[in-house]
Length: 286
Image 1 (cartoon, rainbow, N blue to C red):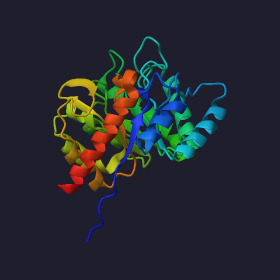
Image 2: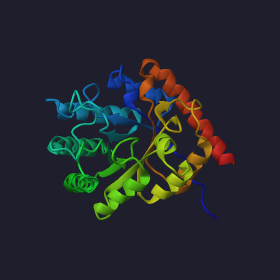
Image 3: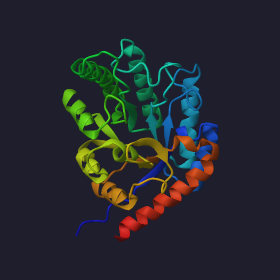
């Protein structure tokens, strides 16, 4: 007889708490019963270029332990490296060294905090760059970062993002082939993004990405509209999705990503965990 699937572990993204101090974010999430936090490195919560970074990381590690929270590290702050260009420079840009340096710093921070993964996405391809050359540059950049991933023992979790160069699970799998199936290259599966842009249903995307899924983000969304919505405000049927993730044996966090909820962050986080726990019970009873 097969053992029952492992319960999912839910986190919440700090990009949905942009008006809170990071210490307060952790307190709120722990009080609400979350299992972890998805930390976006940025100017507000944890700046990877801060002069006192080692002290901040040590303090954060203690706070996570005190609250019993796990963590995953994300690098999706849109204007962190370029105040004018969203997600620029990319690993395909002429100035890709800046992005590589950020990702290497993120890997070191992740190792110090006990995060098993660092999240990243492709950003847009430079205008006028041939697609084949874009793939070559992106793969070369990933391979350079994977050298640091090996050093720190932290995996990359690459996210297909709507309207970026790598926007679907299929293109993410293509990138995995270009880096020769490196064991530390994986996928961040964003459930809302899959519903938004993928031709195949969300459940098919979960199964297609299954062997490489390292990290999961979750929110509601409408087809063709890249807007992160609270659960129940979009079109996704969540109990089957959560059941599929449980059947996969996903051990990482399933992190809520509702960036637009910062002005009401504690209540959005409360409603989110209540919805997900109820959806998980429905999935278990089905």
